[in-house]
Image 1 (tube, rainbow, N blue to C red):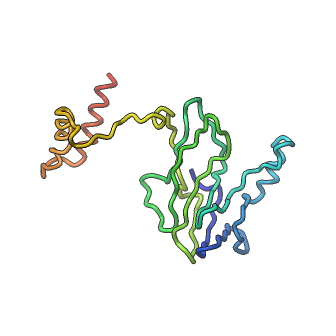
Image 2 (tube, rainbow, N blue to C red):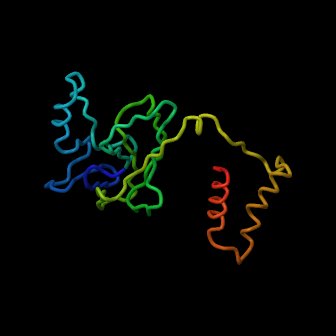
Length: 195
């Protein structure tokens, strides 16, 4: 998910300010709307919800925490939820960290947002429409409601557990093994299972 507009945050350790392209100054962050969104929302929303336009930015109750709305609403099929997290395989910035969390979007219908914690003070932290802010991943409730694993002590491991452990670890002691062998073996195994 990309931010709906490029903007910057400035945290002095106590207060947070924000600005965006075309703005003349920095504004104290008490709760900020996407420019022009309130009017656009009122035009399409029913009269009894016309005043409920979701805010674009909200300062959290903890120091340096900001909630950022993506501009999207989210709803999933029954028994499906969304895991919200920082974008994977992209180097993190030094200015903030994403919180992770599961949103049960099969029953909760509302703004798709992320929470971040600013980690840098007294300099701007920039967010750009071409740099991913966070990602969402659909997950079945069964994947997190009841654990599909168990935690064992070493003394609880059975011979089959030790055998599988050795199959995983032993190849790593071979200095001449091909790079990426795990990925190749996994793809072969999955292709074989799908036949």
